[in-house]
Image 1 (cartoon, helix red, strand yellow):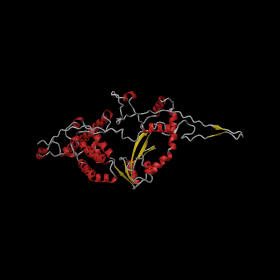
Image 2 (image 1 turned 90 degrees about the vertical axis):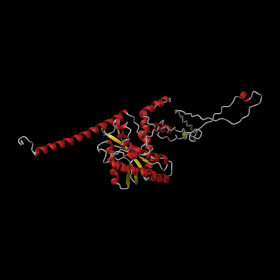
Image 3 (image 1 turned 90 degrees about the horizontal axis):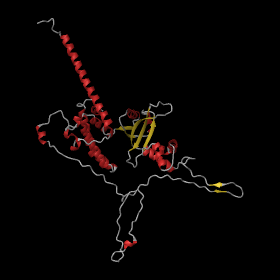
Image 4 (image 1 turned 135 degrees about the vertical axis):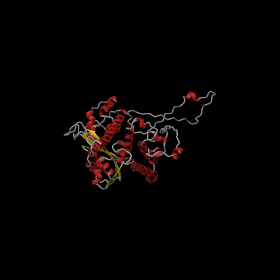
Length: 420
């Protein structure tokens, strides 16, 4: 044997080590490539795909999410013999239109369309007699109309020269302004409920025959906010007395804010009662940041459950105040699974086998269906339904998530939601 040119054991070990290192690098690069491809597909879907989070995939064919669960084991002969392919179709349920006859919220007027007097005389010569009536219902909308209110205040004098007497002006929301409470309410509702910007409201007002400058309406909104401050504080006090609240936050950019860069991001915090005790209370709180000190200051005195997403500010808040217990939001969880489904390659989305994301979405759909069915029930009935119907679905979802942790790449979109 020629030992002069044969590799030594140390060089073989070095080559093996280098090869293992390259293989690990290759695995990492493949994982990164898969992550970037997934992010690209999700970005493309968000930019060009449907914006709705509605899911009507293959899961409609199955009553249970695990009917087509992905397993590493091959199906047994017995399983295959019991498998049936069911061909189904879904029919969109027609939405029932609200009956105008039974509507008690709208004002109504009665138009009676009677026969002409000559038509009430029959051809036989006898007078026709009443025998009931036929009633039909139509809907009429009166567009907003601008009206000028003239306030006349007669003056009174006396021969004793005691001066002129005149009735005081009625109190107006904004003194020395043409704005009535009705006009301010219309602008507030249009802007904050209907999402119409002030410049567009200016066009609408002009179409009604009056011109109102956008700067004037903006000033009215600021003054109205000051007038409604007491109502706002009363609603805050009512809100923090609840035992369960919901919270969320949205980054916004304010272009012209004193002592702040136009590129700085601010935050609009929104808090909401559950609405189970009547009409929900929804309040907004503008702040310049997303730190936990903002909900901490707003929720002074609140003790109970706070439903929110997984942002670190809420976690820091619950760690600081043990009286606040965080609960998750199923809509946020569902959105993550929907994003993972949207980011899948088209060939996988069109495959007959139900994906892992669809399995999770089907289980969440079952929970939504239960909530939809019991939404008008009493508190006790909802509690019993959740214990008897929702809890088994949640337990099944938890077991499924635990199992997927060992099967799904942690750096993928699906792996991210499964691991958390």
